[in-house]
Length: 485
Ligand SMILES: Cc1cc2nc3c(=O)[nH]c(=O)nc-3n(C[C@H](O)[C@H](O)[C@H](O)COP(=O)(O)OP(=O)(O)OC[C@H]3O[C@@H](n4cnc5c(N)ncnc54)[C@H](O)[C@@H]3O)c2cc1C
Image (cartoon, helix red, strand yellow):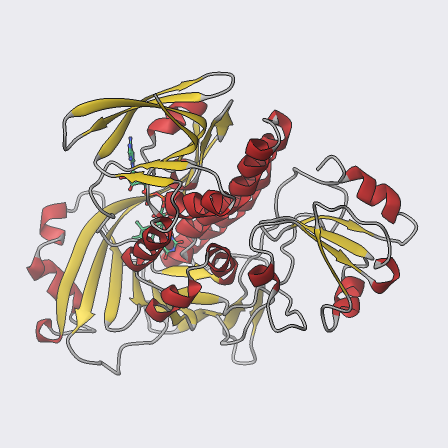
């Protein structure tokens, strides 16, 4: 029976990201994907700066950037055409070293992730492979799958298995008996179009039409791609809604039939739910397998990529040293509270789009002089987990600082932990397992450390702060703790 370090079920954006991150650490990866190619119905069109950092770590940004545009933000408009809320995404590089928000076409990302995976000798991708059975043992997992092209059954052994197998995950059935339903269920039609010519009067931002008669969303996507989404009433006939006649009549206020190609159309039921458990023994779930959210904030895929980034280095560490249940448990506790904040905010946004203008989507809303409300993006930290949970810096993302040699933090240390030191500590004995940077490597590092009220900081491979050290005196105790790390 063939053996792998890690087997991943599903080659969507979560599986593709996770496989790339594990491969970066040098381990063998098998990916089993039921389809013969990537999914081709309309899905993700937006991701943020935190996610671009993960793509940077994987090494796909140079090629992938060509297929993205910077997102200018979202406006919420009521049935009278009045802007009732603005969510601007300034064209300004953030602390993550990228623009706050990008638009893309999901198949372009999936292609770039696969292109990169094909460069690793130890990565095997098996398409037309549907996983049927999974069995957890104390030191491995056994996986049976059918090759639907050859009509054959196969078995493999793997030290770890991660189900990135989407909303109807078979892996979830192994790790969790319960999906915690957060309460949003609504059917929406999603229509992707390609303009035949530029159409200047179409907005270059996302518009959420908070209209009780017909809640709808318009997305300004990459190049000539545009998307419209609209809510469907319970009794409406789905076949009729997806007919060309109905679609072009809905699009009348914006577009004539002669002005665009209808590329893809489908109906989704948007749901909000989080799996109660995210792992059992050596089996884990990530992405839509672990959580579902409506797409109003464009954060569903982003959450899956955050899962992959959190889990990859932990699995790699267990493969390198030894299996550590307690250490791996932090994956679930750190990720659930983070994703819950996105799911709940997205649900409130959904209610707002459903024309409940009284809903406060986030705490970060201010009113301008003309009375227009403006919303800021949320930045949830990690839930309780590794490191000292009383440390106020722990669980925050560490900025992508520029080093004096011109490189950035993420370019230089692609998947290793980093010890950041103030000049007072630079001659102290450090641990060889940490890459170290100090004030002579980075301009402005002392101000940055001051802003964290710290003399030293340990940054995890997923760029979150593991722990900070407040004083020179406490450094020896602080660093001793990480001997075990
Ligand atoms: C209309 C819409 C718009 C969206 N917009 C955004 C957005 O702008 N931004 C954003 O971040 N998110 C968005 N999302 C959410 C995003 O598309 C999903 O969260 C994301 O695709 C989930 O990725 P995944 O890899 O976890 O799962 P999936 O993409 O569903 O991949 C799962 C894979 O597993 C395979 N699989 C399943 N079962 C098996 C099996 N038994 N054996 C083998 N293979 C199997 C499937 O074939 C599939 O390829 C949107 C979703 C929708 C519906």
